[in-house]
Length: 153
Image (cartoon, rainbow, N blue to C red; front, side, top):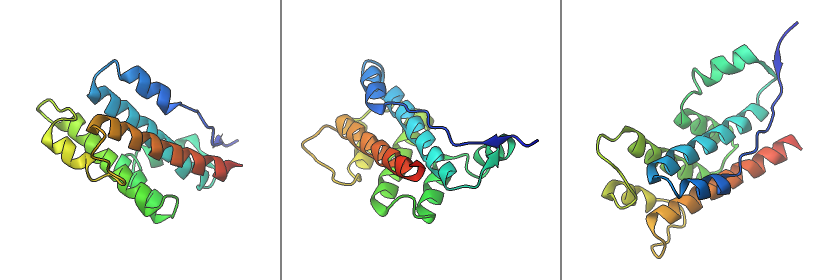
């Protein structure tokens, strides 16, 4: 008897997560929001894969598709996401990496972060960088969720 994985959707309302995180640090918002989007992207990839055993799914997503970057690249290569979503997800990944791996404290007033935020599609200089990041990550999450729903139903 084989152990087969069915794609199950665990819905996480990113808006609620972001509202809760606003009371915490910007770094926490970035890290958790990026993890939610990473998880959604993984679910989207799973909808396009053959039925996998739990062990094979773990091997794939703890191996070659472990990183957010790899998931973004593969989703793009298989036409699951378009150019705009690819570019925005890449920026989200870069911002996440700045917060996660910097030896100095980062926030959305740090020049490195502001520079990255300004690369987002539809950058709006009238919106502060942190708010704009939240808008873009929520938009990306919603786009992936819509694609996930279409793939499943």
